[in-house]
Image 1 (cartoon, rainbow, N blue to C red):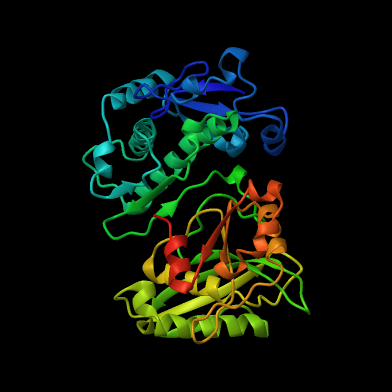
Image 2 (tube, rainbow, N blue to C red; image 1 turned 135 degrees about the vertical axis):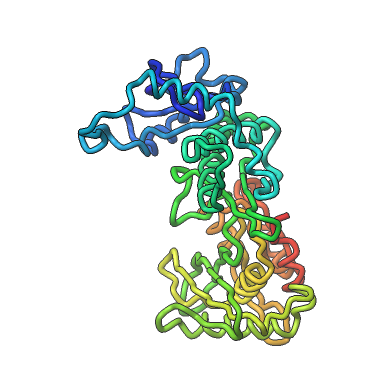
Length: 387
């Protein structure tokens, strides 16, 4: 651990960078990040008196990962005369008395997971970043730069909260930080990259229009995990972006499309899905490739994209649907739930017809994953949508 610094404008000092009374932690390790996460947490190298002190950690507004900072080399220095340190320090000192928090008003809304101290930390980090980019307080701040500062501030604050959660404090369990740009923008969730795994589900909500599904398989294919990704735009119809999509998946998409049209009132309210074009893509994370009986998940992804609302994080949806809207039976539901747990899901959504078969689910699996039951597609979507 290299040391700590205070967030905002950066003035010289041994290990500290001062601004607005907040603290930024810069972290480096003798081992790789994944190993450090396995054996402890990101604050592990700190002195014993503070490494597990969650109250102390909660006052750290920003954890800036050392692995994201380039090594010092000659290309980072100018060969011309630059600002001397005392002039630069004076500039930063004067900026400290200013604030850019007012730039957020009316332009950014934060999700409900941010507590008062989280909100304060993010505000100060955003303010510090914007002062570095735009020292003139009267100058306009473009949306793209404001969103960059907001995403970065949420990420570095969430990194602190994730370490508190690793220590086991129940107070810090909800770390699903999100924001909305503008009055009608889409809610976007911010994760810390070192906590994400490309081939596991994780606990963060996917963007609107994306959903994890498990194909229960059949005689010709084993069960497997897939991610359905849907984007919508003005137009009409549904396109599959996969090259030569498997027949079972193509059939699931076709049936989900017809159900979206015929039950649009129950699924998406007054929005007309026929006035939108949907682009659908399936990604496989197992040996299974057909994507059979994933119609309920595809329908949820289509509806999520049209509504602009994400689904619950850590959720896998299981189940096929026919043209009449009836839910297809799921064979070997215990195997499905066990695979969902293995892939990192915290909840799996199953047709209610599997309830009796899941009585034989082992106690170990039942205590580690939540099973949600649905009766039909609208019921599944209602329970899957993120609040």
